[in-house]
Length: 165
Image (cartoon, rainbow, N blue to C red; front, side, top):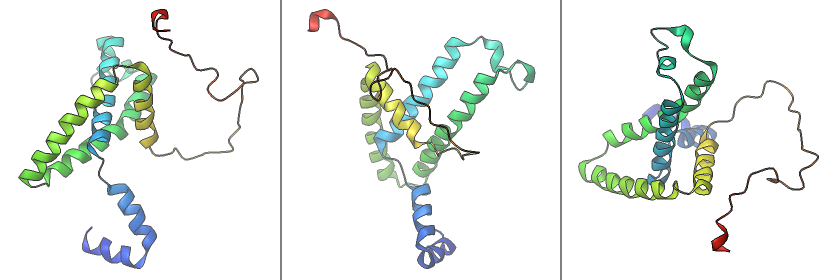
């Protein structure tokens, strides 16, 4: 906290809560998950699109709408990663070494978990939940599938090979 923020937080506790919520550091596992999520999305985008679609600064007309949306969705994750790097820069040497060791172990654990498609889906959902809620422009109309018997009924199930049963 700066001195003005500290004084303001003592006078108005809701400001302190909002400030603490915004500046709270991510733990090593969450930071590693965000890093793997951004790396996976970037890699997937590079494999799936022709190279000319990434030349938006030199040829702005070639950029497609879907890549614009994915770029804006990635901005939040990239901002969180740069915030983590900035926090690391202000640490003392031994704290930085300890944090790096924790981050390396967490990144290995996250990469092992992401091998399984179901675990990958859960980890991706955790990163997606970190994003701020979009502001509502109007009334929300709830739509339900009449054929669905329960929540998640339409989701595809990944079965193991028959030898496992």
